[in-house]
Image (cartoon, rainbow, N blue to C red):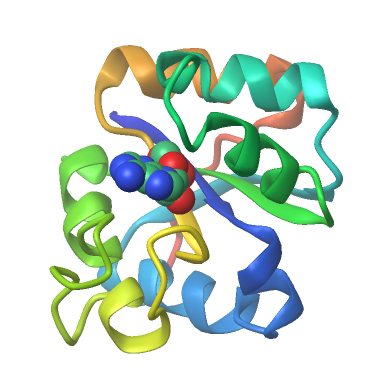
Length: 143
Ligand code: CMP
């Protein structure tokens, strides 16, 4: 089954949106198999955003993402990577459609509430940056 890494960013945590965001993925039918509240280290943030190193917004992004607690999650389900990206909405705040998380709650491209892996390779790399294998729970749905 496909897995993805989702993370409520410091702005989402501070605005009290963890519950709203988790609710949307639960209602969609995905399964939460790991989560934790943490403050990212600079090293962890630079690794997470390595593909953006050298871009003009990189320093601002690392400073922001390490500025307070994030809520890191691993979700499992069919096509969870692509479907969760659709539910999150476009990175550019002007393109994030109503009904998506960013479209409904964010006005800034920088303060855009949530990160979601964009490919299976990114998901695997990002999950390992936050979770050990033992921290992920596999369980069958009985209801
Ligand atoms: P995220 O999905 O976490 O991935 C990279 C982040 O960089 C993105 O969300 C934005 O928060 C941030 N960012 C800031 N400026 C830009 C930009 N011009 N293009 C893309 N991402 C940006």
